[in-house]
Length: 167
Image 1: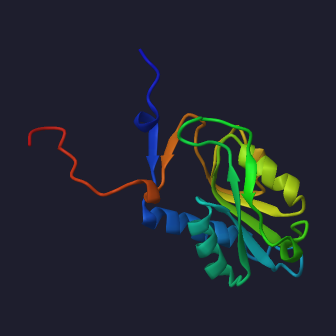
Image 2: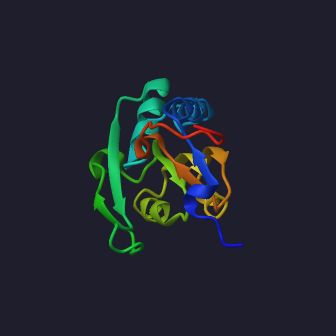
């Protein structure tokens, strides 16, 4: 037997499911900020963290939102040393105290290691976490197995699917 391809052990996340899970993340973070339970800002990890960060910001009434971009792969080279391509406003974010860093998923942890080095006091939260790197995240909603490929709604398109039996 051969190993399954990524899409064969897939976890398909709809927009509705992502919204419910991001709200659950917000509920877990509510009242847990270091200053009287409040958070002063959110830094979304682009691109996957932007949708969950928007939902968390709405739920927790956080108006200060910035982004950080970390590139660790591209379509030509599957893996490279991660590097920050866009930093948040460091005068505003500082060392991360009172700041939520939001991403969709922690998988290998390479992105979060770079972010943690830049923002050592930030609280890192993801919607989904894989076992290999879940210890890099303070708060997450759902754990999925390391060999599961998550299909996010921004990666999918609705299309006709042929039934298992017949036409």
